[in-house]
Every structure is written in structure tokens, then in C-alpha cells.
Image (cartoon, rainbow, N blue to C red; front, side, top):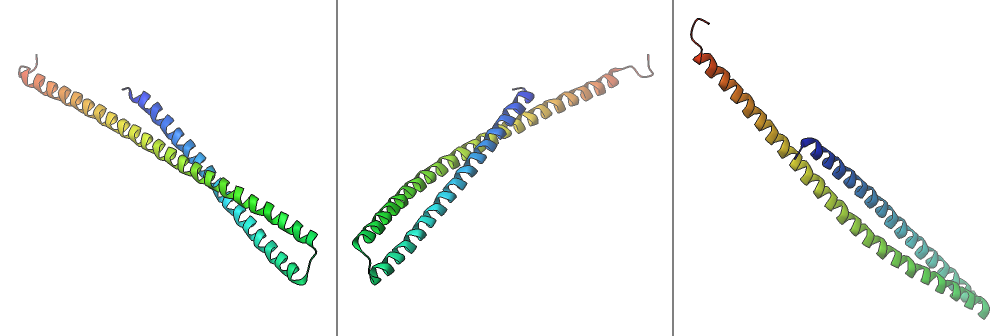
Length: 148
């Protein structure tokens, strides 16, 4: 294969690997943000439960208690949905990690091919030069002594 074509293939492989790395980084950040959001929701629920416990201990009417419980139920639903989001994010991170590994492997394979092709071309060039040198030496020895 032509070395210039191989260089183009290598550049494409590097670009794809770079793109896969960027996607993976974005998915990692998204997963981290989802995890932080879950932590915030859980912390808010804990604070709200404490508040409800304190208010219930000092006495509250049934309507207030029902409102607090509805709110807690909605908060628990949000926590559950956030857990599902985290699961999807983790699956996406794993998928992007696998894609990054695949692109890295392809890039390395192409780079190895480029290196082997360069080495082959260099060996061929060295053989040509050696052959020219050998032919020059043979011609010098075949020339009659003393010139013309």
C-alpha cells in the first residue's frame, strides 16, 4: 500500500480515536452529574424526613401530614428515576469505553502497518543502494587499468 495512503488512514484512525475519547469523557461527566444529583435528592429527602419527624412529634394536622407524605412520595419517585438515569449513564459509559478501546486498537494496528511499510520501503531502498554500490565496484574492477 502507498505510504501516503497509509498516512491518511492513520490520520483518520487518530481522529476517530480522539472523537471516541471525547464522547467517553462527556459520558463520564454526565454519569458524575447524575450521581451528584442523586446525592442531592437523597440528602434533601433525609432533611425533609427529619423535618417531618420533628413536626409530627410536636403535632400537626392530618392535611399537613398528608401533604408532607405526598411530597416525600414524589421525592422518592424522583430518586427512583434518578437511579434509572444513573443505570443508563453507566451503560453508556461502558459502551463508550468499549468504543474507545476499539478505536485505540484500530489506530495502533494502522500505526503498526505504517511502521512495517516504512521499514519495508527502507530495506528496499537500502538493497537498491547496495546493488548500485556493488555494480559500481564491479565496473571499476572490470575497467582496464590505466584508463581508456
